[in-house]
Image (cartoon, rainbow over all chains, first blue to last red; front, side, top):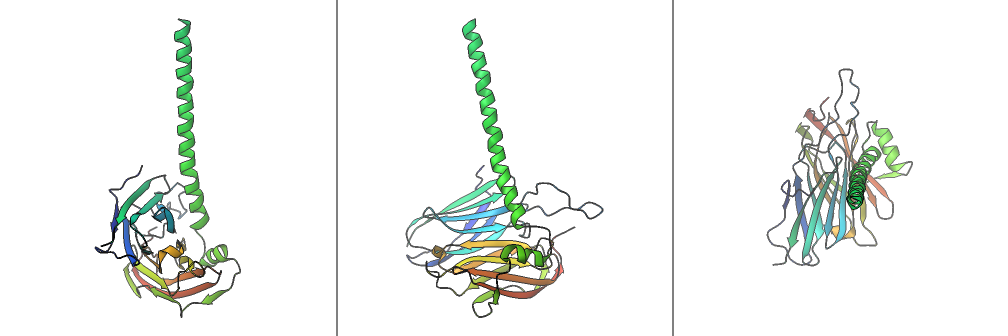
Length: 110
Length: 164
């Protein structure tokens, strides 16, 4: 289920040891809104939206977002991390239908 | 002949077992996601959201420490870029644990909760959110010692983004 084509990560081109690095992450996702019937009642169903974003660096979870439908379509998030050692930075998006989208960036020092 | 029968029975049982696993997998994947969604993003008034998230804990004014970058006017409520930075040392002894974003006029006021570890290096978050109509947007910061700090700004929305 891991679909990495839909996730984009942007990092600075050069990272030095000890830097606080800002990362921008985007996932292509419809983020369905609440729908209502003619009487204005909410239609009860399992809406498909991203409700969890997990950022892991060197195997440790450093940041999570818990989100509701109040986040825009094709959700974009930015965050920072302290680059202490070279290694993988993984960003994972989970949605309410069990979908999982992830991408890993390899942090290297220059 | 008898052997054939046994094999068939085994195969059938094995297939049943596999079905069971698949069904259980689907259950496990679907349920926590839905449960989590029900816990955090509810269709309710902002007072109820604040009470549900923070109970009766005192919330202090955070203007001195919390810097919010909310646009004063959002032309399109479907995509409103926001960011929040908190002045915090981000050491294991003192760091920002959570940043909540709550939109007063949204039908689901809870927008997002960011949970940070000291390794994040800076208490910062950015996101694109939806706003249904003009109203206050709040950032509530929970520090590792449990202190709550809140900042709010009015965001004017020209075209709402929550539909219905």
